[in-house]
Image (cartoon, rainbow, N blue to C red; front, side):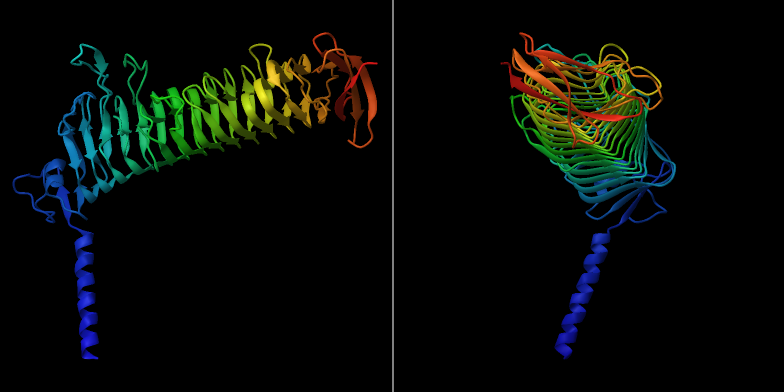
Length: 538
């Protein structure tokens, strides 16, 4: 019994010792401190510089900044310089289980261009409660050995090497000049980063030569990053996922951030990798973000298993949400529950460009007041359903939903209408290169010209089309359906109010291009359903 008790006491004491060791020591830093006389764990003898405290820190320690200003001179690091020791004035190299925390009023002041705080090959690092105050410097240029001039991009917090499990919270980044937080240079190997409850203001630079414009609050985002609940205002760019290598980036979450007055892109995924096509992004979720007054809301240019859900974009000079296979292939997309309004171009576009785009589900989105069509799609195997588009297409002859080209595209149960203003010229537009589009139970109210303008091939009107008369009591004009089938085939249009009892409404013969136009008058305050069928001419 005594032996067992002694063993228990030994294990207990060992656990206490390990617990104390893991809890670490507080290293105090103060503007009035002294690096020569500073002592670990002694608040009466604080260090003067953050770097001195870092140099003396051990695993489990906390570096605590007291209120006040800590002036540092940023370091411009050319991206083509191979020297790893050539880094920012504050640096952590190969450290783990360390916390840098600022008391209320702790400010790191950095004037001029360059990196401020570098983490290289670090794990389990926490940075919290610190204000980083810059003076919004321009990006300088440098001459490489081959004589070419390159911009010397920089970041306030700069990840290098293989960092893992980094947390940055409750910090402020003001006038950061280029990037605020970034793994700037490839290979972008930093993973498991969480950035939340931070504020980014008045950042970015506009003088970058070959990138035209640059400067994001958070960039270089890699695998297993979570960027959420941050506020970004008056910046060039917001959140940027990009790479210049074919390394797969996956499991990224950008959620519940608020971005206002963005001069360029709000949230972007640039799949600008060197070998094409190459799967470089997978399992990316962009959800519940608010973007207000942006040049371009959300841009995605490639990837697999992407989800853009429940975001709100209001007042975009260009597109609200743009998903395009311009830099890489796109597949398995879900665009769901977004609210997009007041866009000078389109509200939502999911379009195939240089590379293939396949398997997209665009549903339950609300789009209103756009210059071009509310929703534009092209590609293969796309479902567009249960969306609502109001007052879209005010700049020209556009409509609620536009199918540009592709195959196996279904447009069903969408609600397309004008209200108070006659913006929407067409309900649904199907362009020439769209083949076999299926239309099913869409509801279209009072477009200015036609309910449907169809120039596609073999559009399937066998599915139901539902049209409603004006809710404002306006007398609707004659509406038209352009149906394209086989040349010289007879087409019949049936009408129903309950989708059970069908009556032949009109009959026409396709012309030499396979087109027939049906005209009808929709009675006031009534819902009607139409179905088109095709028969060989006798």
